[in-house]
Image 1 (cartoon, rainbow, N blue to C red):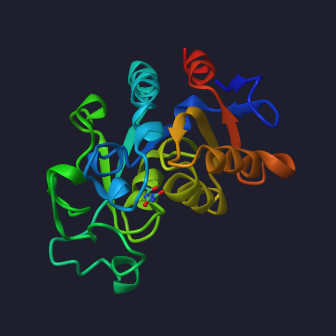
Image 2 (image 1 turned 120 degrees about the horizontal axis):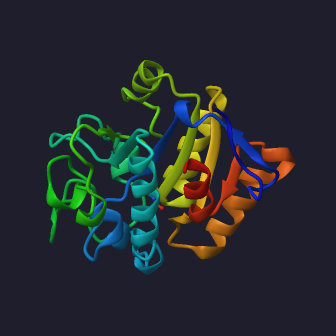
Length: 222
Ligand code: TIU
């Protein structure tokens, strides 16, 4: 049976919950806690850390509805074989990808900092996608996982809105998925970039997708 979120922007979002999955992007200690990758880049982590309870509520709504929750982590192999030098050498961070930080090596798979924050930890059996890029479709099993599950609609949450969330949403949109962003379950280190990303996603008649608050998404899943 189809569900609808009448107040979604830019217009009502109609979807089939049976074919819908939640994708929680990169809610890792490296982006949300002091001493992680996000902070080493010079960012204030507060706006991103603040959405944890809202993301938890959205995850609970999907679990309660028996729908798939997929988690992603931006991270690299310990030997950095999947980290392009152009990514590692970018800018002037206080610590680079692979360097030893307070939560282990920055953005390296298996290190404490690269793992998902305890409040949002994946449940047994939920898919966790480790991705070397900003988008979750590049060099991962996500396309195959979604095909196997018969998914045609994706709800997005996580950080950061204009980097990994928007990149993944655009990848999904180009692959034919209906895309909805939970506007209060996503954040950026730059509030003005979050606002701009939401606006550009839903502009031109949902050129990339729709946005709606977590409470309205949860209501539609009941
Ligand atoms: N720096 C920043 O805004 N984001 C990232 O590097 N990765 C994600 O968005 N996950």
